[in-house]
Amino acid sequence: MPMSEMILSDPHRAAARSILAEVFGFGELREGQAEAMEAVLGGRNVLAVMPTGAGKSLCYQLPALVLGGLSIVVSPLVALMRDQVAALRLNGIAAATINSDLSRADNVATWRAVRAGEVRLLYLSPERLMTGAMLEALGKVEVRLIAIDEAHCISQWGPAFRPEYAALAALRGHFPGVPIMGLTATADPATRDDIVAKIFAGDARCVVTGFDRPNLSLAVALKSNWKKQVVDFVAARAGACGIVYCLSRRKTEEVAALLRAKGHTALPFHAGMDAADKVQAQNRFMTEPGVVMVATIAFGMGIDKPDIRYVLHTDLPGSPEAYYQEIGRAGRDGKPAETMMLYGLDDIRMRRVFIEQEESTPERKRREHKRLDALIAYCEAPSCRRRMLLHYFGEETAACGNCDACLDPVETVDGTTEAQMVLSAIHRTGQMFGAAHIIGVLRGSESEKITRFGHQALPTFGVGADRPQREWQGIIRQMVATGLLEIDIAGYGGLRPTPAGSALMRGDGTFRYRPDRIRKDPVAKRTTAAATQAVEELDAAAAALLKSLKALRLELAKARNVPAYVIFSDRSLIDMAAKRPRTPDEFAEVFGVGAAKQEKFAEAFLQVIAADAAAG
Image 1 (cartoon, rainbow, N blue to C red):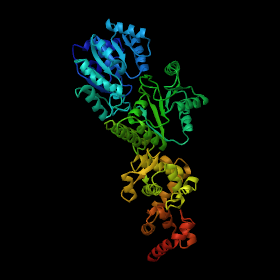
Image 2: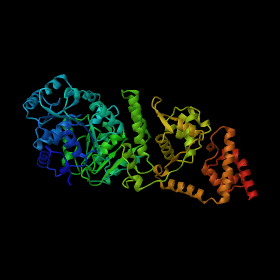
Image 3: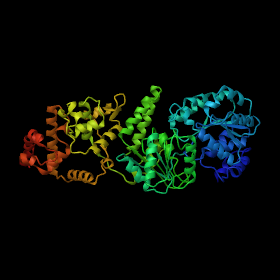
Image 4: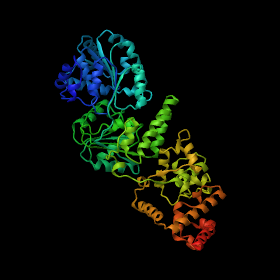
């Protein structure tokens, strides 16, 4: 049965079917639309949560025409109101807006048309609607429906909370008996509950359709040379329409210029541009083929372009909701579309700073940090990304087969020892330095800063010299993502252990990470593979010797009051067990053995190896 056939009970069924076909040109409704319309036409308050591109606007536009009289639509952006009014007018619908971008004469003329009953949908910002004069004037006309677009802006838990939206809670009192519909694409369960409590006093029908957009492929990559990554990604999709999101206006201009230099039609779009330039850019994007819009989040809300083939984020968004809404602009035609996010440890630090600098309550900041935690966990997902993203919105699903984690799965490896190295270096340097300094200590860098603080004398100095800087960056980033480390915003980005990290440093717990996600160099991959193969190829006798070597390592570590890895890494002990050195010179050939360690530890380890040989 077509959805349009089950849309409404009489007396609205025939009118709705006629308007759907004749005004909007649709043969049927999408999932959730019929349920939301039936509720509001029956006089119920409704909160409709539907994916971007699922047709939320129709949920109030069609009922507005069925009900007659005036419907008020609350919208957050003047540009969005202007575009929606223009689209409705093209459909022959009497829609209008009163806003600050229009002249007083235009606004007065619009109001006269409203008062004369000539307008069916009036678009207003919350600031304009909730003035005493506007509420008094609307009280004298026949208001039949109120729709609040982007309803997550109401909630203090929402990703785009606007205090002006909070005043909308008074609408129930001003318009008793008038059904109110809230609409959003991005509301997790906590936000939905908050909206229903504030706007509807708990009395609303919630219509929540699935959040999944199966045609969107999901991918995340670590920032390395981000400009090259952006250029390569767009070049591989030359001629396709896409959006590249950047965090700052400056970066937007920079990336657009970079892509234009590579032969792409790339346009910048941000809030600092002249209004006419923004309109021109938007028009080109909507009409010309293959245009790449390089934009801040100022672009995209209300954009209904079906053939956007990709969305690329050059920086970490602020929350899963923001990310979901932004990628949702791709593939609205149902055909395959791609999403890619580039991010790194500095993105996490920057987002933490933004949250702390926000003028809000401690509870809201706590919630925003938790939202960011969820997005970081998505970035570091060891398995299906879609499953993790949908779980955040309260929806469970099987592995999707259409994200990078599903299409190119990466094995995790035990990194407990490496994590303990990081934690010890942070502890011994006073928990006041960022990742670059900690990595320098671990890799034995005698930089000016390290020598100035005397950190070259620490037991942890140089214990991680066998691993490249990029791998240590990945380990630290994944430790942040898994809650072992936190970034001290008040301390200007210094790393410090969480309680879980402190417990791991004491030997309580484990840590696994994905070396292949951070090791792109084929030589590094071969080295990792060789080390893993070496463990697997140890025979029973060598495995027994390895156990004895680890026991000695622990004994020496306790005597020196240092973590075991400070003595030797697992990789060194594995090499030692495989090679079975008999002399100090042979011991010096073991992986990770330098002159100092040869001098300090050769005798003790050679004794264990000799004893094992004698026993065998």
